[in-house]
Length: 342
Image (cartoon, rainbow, N blue to C red; front, side):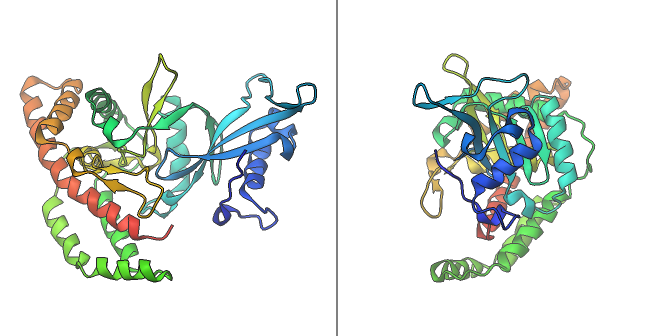
């Protein structure tokens, strides 16, 4: 059983590794058998599946002397013995991040079944119901059954009314924020420092101004958006006979221009973030969605909105136009975000 080490998240200097920190959290916030367990009964292992949080599987075990092995503790009332721990990661660096809003958002989304059931919220993250899953990879995301599901998902997600600021200016603020963070980044590693100097020579100040001229002013609808839809935030859950796509990474959600969700998704389809070596992603240009593929997904989305026939074509063309522009914005944001330390 692997122990997870994440020193920069450990606030208590008496804690020597992340397993101890996670154990302290479950004892304090989960209750039941978790509160009575000893460290020797606790296991914690890192997992993939979210671009903005650190994910871990936590479980309770006990020594079975007769069988000379380990077995899972029996379920006790409403307390599971295997849960998912999500610790806030890079999202805390995002412009406009507000922990109170984050917790409110998570409670609402869990109640509406957009994210798994939440067992406990705490300042550094949350405990959720564990569901066996794996990340969808870039080739799988292009399949029509996946894009159709995501079109329906976005139509329902965008229809939600949420208790947060309803303005579209956050996208422009985010572009400025990460542009500024990227320019102020300094690396001690010589190779990374050289690479950063090469990036700056592309004159990203001018790139940002050109991007703003292309994207703004924007007359798209402002709705409640996911803001990070794409590979890395798409899981395949369930069992062999009941597989389903689950969208995660909802912590980035806010009111935004509707077409940004499509632009972000289309822009990231060409990337595979499952690479373990630097720069931790690979690119396949053949995965860039064609105009026909983009239109097919957008058309399904528009039909689910149940708009009057006269409005459907106008909405389809507007999303096609703005999503193409916002693909550029998504590339710029990811480029600057990738330059920031974290």
